Amino acid sequence: MKTIQEQRNFLPKCFLLFGLSFILGCPGEVPQPADPPKKEDASASNNKELKRIILLTNGNSAYWDTCRIGLQDADTELDLAEAGFKAEFMTNDGTPEGQLKWLRQFSSLSDIAAVAISVTDAANVAIAEEMKKLQKKGIKIITVDSDVDREQFRDSRYAFVGTDNTTAGKVLGICIKNILPTGGGYVAFVGRTGAQNAIDRIDGFAETAGEKFEELDRMADGMDRSEAKENVRNAIQNHGDKLTVLVGIWSYNGPAIVDVVKEGGTNTRKIVAFDAEAGAITAVSSGMLDAIVVQNPYQMGYQSVRLLKALVEDDKKKISEILPNYGNENGDILDTGLKVVVPNDNKTLKADMFQEKTEFLRFDEFKKWLDDHDLTCS
Image 1 (cartoon, helix red, strand yellow):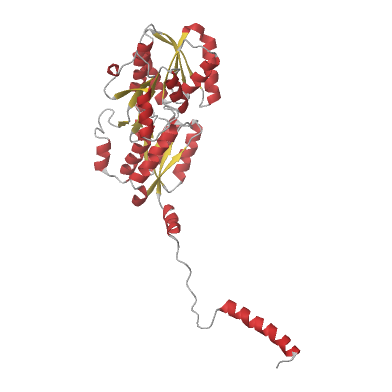
Image 2 (cartoon, rainbow, N blue to C red):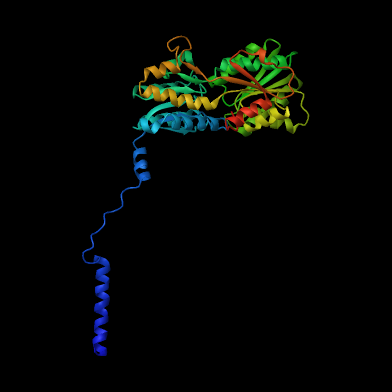
């Protein structure tokens, strides 16, 4: 039997041996290799190597949310990752200077394969030049939603994906001519008067509305929604009873007009607008908006990715399928279509007033279309 002192000497040695066995492992135990990388880690590594297909907006609006969904669906359905690409959506601040910064940044990056841009100002030389520089670097460029000035800068992009905006303006002109046959004065409200889609829509509207309608002003808000409302207040104050029609050119202008008109109580003026933001949808439902011309931003996002992928891969068959008349006049334009939406009880507008390519819908039919496509705006 050990003495008390021997027991005391034994205990530290025991703890020392136990600690060593814990550190070194049991005799004969083979060290195990580290766990293999998880699949998601490998995927994340692969994502770093993917080339980017970018869609750059002119500014921020709920309208672009639907375009983003189209882009994301194209990314998935066209299996971009398998082909070595990924689609990304980037939002500009509403200014040409903001777009210039984005374009110059793209030029300095090695992973940019292609860009679709909604041009803020059609005649902006600096933006067109930056687009050309990207083309020289091998980056594919198209415009979406709003084009460059085609007479000056058509060669700065391969094609335009979006609405035939002159036709869209004419469609809105047909609406007001039938809603208010007596004519009157109108003001057009828009984010930037120099944007090509704004120019084309306002000119198309004036052409079809006809001589009975006088343009009193076109007012830009710089994509500032507070300024958009203030413009409406100023137009009503400045033009009084001479102002019989309020025209919203960009997606948020229609809701801004309606909000200001509501401030004054009763309204005898007619309101027509473009696009179907949530506020516009509510206003058509209640009859505050007499008609809206609705674009298809979902297809703008989807078809932009589809075309850019084909261009980067130099898939001539696919490019020809998307743009079958390329090389002919306006063969570089992929028209994504139009809808005219009116309140359910509208009696002045009918489907046969519009060309076959323009779909005519009453509010309930349009709401069903949105629901069927899981969209909240268009």
